Image (cartoon, rainbow, N blue to C red; front, side, top):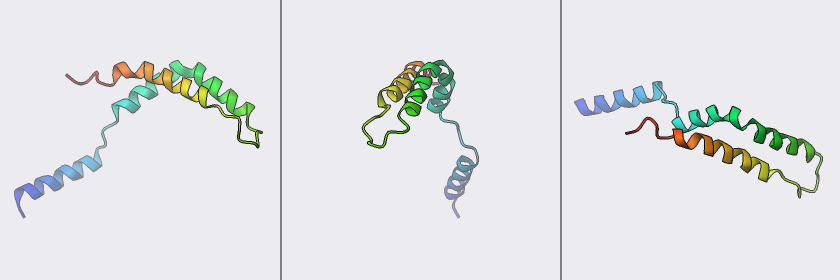
Length: 83
């Protein structure tokens, strides 16, 4: 077996053993407490329409408001570790 194939297998096995956390996910998780108001409004909406059998009612606007808050908060942190 060649040195390169051994090196390749070693690199692959290390990658699967040690998963590097996604910086985007970490930034988004850190921002969730700051967007609790938007999340609360979304949850209130889902409770309010829980009995809807027509399928016409939805909470899309509140859901997007929550993710807009997350994106606005987390975006400056996405590339902090890069040069």
